Length: 241
Image (tube, rainbow, N blue to C red):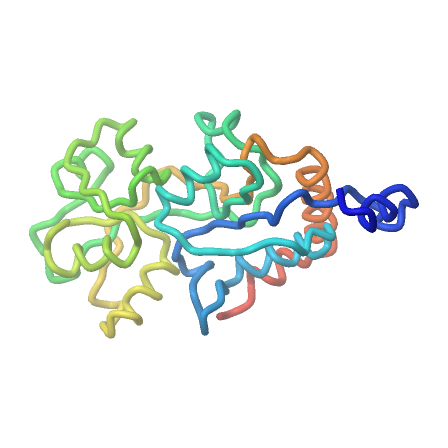
């Protein structure tokens, strides 16, 4: 350890454990986390950064990846914080959960012009090609429900383009993502129609990889609880981008 760092630790000047290495904060491109002017922005990103700042963890780097890549990093590498990740029973022991940023509902959407697609219930959806993100909670949910016509994409934009091009019939997405993707594609959101909502509301968290230092995890958890109690998390998530 550098002599100055050793002195600081010995005298208790830092009041906390030094970070051994910069934290890597990973996410995917969504309505709540996206690239703007070369920086990862969005309401969820603001919550994560406010939490790290409150925790005194200022040495970090935030980056966007395809979901499967971000997930694999958080699953296998130390010092990785991932968001927005669905907290499911299957994932419970795989990560160190910091706090719930939001809850979300996914809806099945189709092109309004596709009168041939009728989805009165979840079982009926099995007859159609459904676009999902690789290793996303929706991918895992549909597989668990016995869906076989699943078309996997790396990113939301790719998934949505397949819907527009007729390569898939349905996409399960939150309403906010659909609005953003329609705007990015320059099409009227009314041209896409919600046809069914599965009973699968999801809690979306920030979570650390299992190998992350205990002190980093506990400080982040405490900081998030403070911000939530102060109403900061709700306020940030309610802000418009």
